[in-house]
Amino acid sequence: MSFAGESPARLFFAALPDATARDRTAAAARALSLEPEARRVREENYHVTLAFVGEIPASQVALLLDAGRALCEAKFNLQFDAYEYWPTAEVVVAAAGAVPAALERLWQDLHRELARHQWALEPKRLRPHVTLARKVSQAPVLQAMSAFDWPVSEFSLMRSDSGGAQPAYTVVGTWSLLDSAAET
Image (cartoon, rainbow, N blue to C red; front, side, top):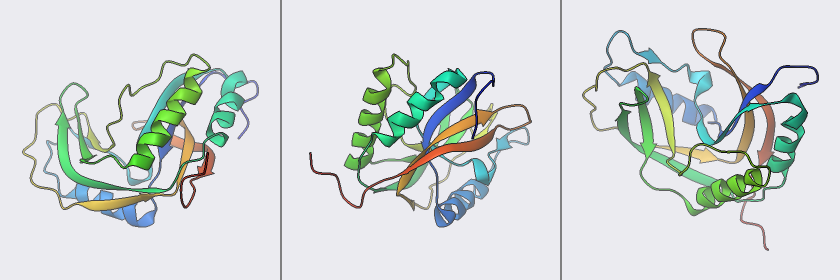
């Protein structure tokens, strides 16, 4: 993907679901009873944000790609086991109650690598979740969620374009995670 001569891009690092995890996430989203004004997230937009970098000039995209390449962490499995309503953001998410150690290391290493370039990153703390619906102005009655696994074997740098009714995400770069943590 070329960024030469383009305006700043809105970028973030994320873990994307495989087909099975996407189907399980979609099933969890379909089980929600939401107000008519709520907007369900499209299945192709499901992701777990690792670091939201923000508006980045085209000239700095290569630094983000280098940051992704620099990381060597192990694959891990997330288990989403509860719905949560976040009133400030007006979203309903599938949340993971436990944070795998490999995810914690990946998150810390990514934030440390990006902080070297003075990027102020979001989120400030690791809270693994997948947004299922936006513009949820009233707290829905959330039933118990059937837990589902989301295996993570790679992570990506993503570009967010918000020109339409819902954002469109494009993969800029993807890096595989290791079968086990690298020896240091």
